[in-house]
Length: 311
Image 1 (cartoon, helix red, strand yellow):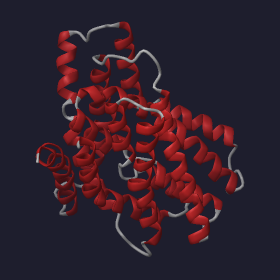
Image 2: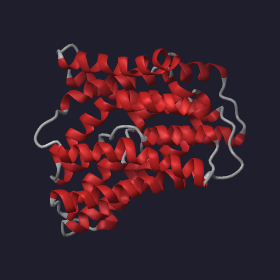
Image 3: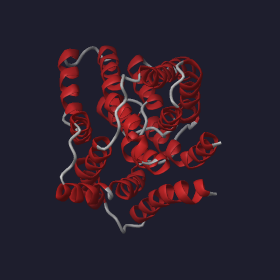
């Protein structure tokens, strides 16, 4: 019961409130954009900065942790591409987009609040390690694949350079990096600054969840749902199962890191795959439906997973 009242209801209750507020016009698109900017540019970076700055760093890079997660991610990426080709006659560029839809988790707006609520500050370090690699490892190969399939409208090298610059310019990455500098240098955050950082960072979880709920009104379930259901199954069932098998039984990752990796793998699809679908004009409805459906079903799937991980 403590999982329901301590994690599930606060997280998804806040998300649901944002959805209802936006659906009934009490929180419009402009307001949601402003709140989302505050979350991404200030609240989340400051929360992560403080958590990492106060964390105890491991002696060595947790390669088993990263390999467990990203082997699983690229396996489901490949399975989604294969399903797209064999079951839905998708072109290669379309396969790339739906592959990303099956592998790319909503780590920002849902993953950070959920993991920090479930496991507390002790999970900040494994969370940091995963977030730092997430976009850097998944987006460049997707971009190269789609561009190659569409005939190289722009030089792939230019696209990858621009993509890397945009990732490195993300405030969350800067917050994580600054926290890492403080942790490595054993520098304490000065008292007055810590009060400001703690205050703004404490707004990250509720604001991120509320904004995510409000943003879901942009998506809907439409058309044939067979393909979105395949993507949702790969994202919320197969990916976390693979990560658990690898992390717990192959690489023997520490328990907290296993739980963090599995929970991140089980997250619903992030909005980034839909942005790729829009940018390249492919699979927009299928990806939009998978984002909405996976987020909706995650109330159940993540609840069950949290119970299993605590067992």
